[in-house]
Image (cartoon, rainbow, N blue to C red; front, side):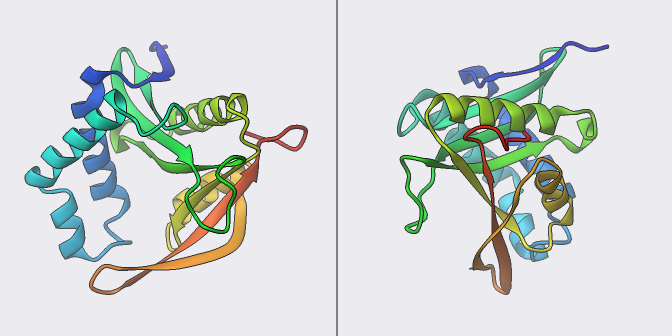
Length: 184
């Protein structure tokens, strides 16, 4: 079995994280986002911007509670998760965190990397004193909804619509990481 695990992202991981993001979006979001938007956010020029943004997230995060984790298999970055204090105005950023993104390279899917990332995220957030974690999910993203649901997450009733040339609805899911009911 390959050497697999989750660790904090390093400066040298920024390009690999951006590459995983682009591949995962191309595969997973092709039915969810307008084709023109998806082409723009996964184009080579966009990938260069993502690399710079991920490098900044690694080297100069806004706070110690903003983290980027990577899933590795035989030293290769195969997925990542980013989390931060929640920013939605109806949430308490002192006790509620947001899973900003969790993506696994489609070539390495269904190998437990997403589950390892989710568990590591919950562990770190619990140590940081968070009790709840939320995540915005495309309403039509059945794969992510099932994945989070299998780990004890559920919709909390919040909704928003992104304007991407056409409306793209999202729902907010949440889970309790404060103790006994945690399933992550």
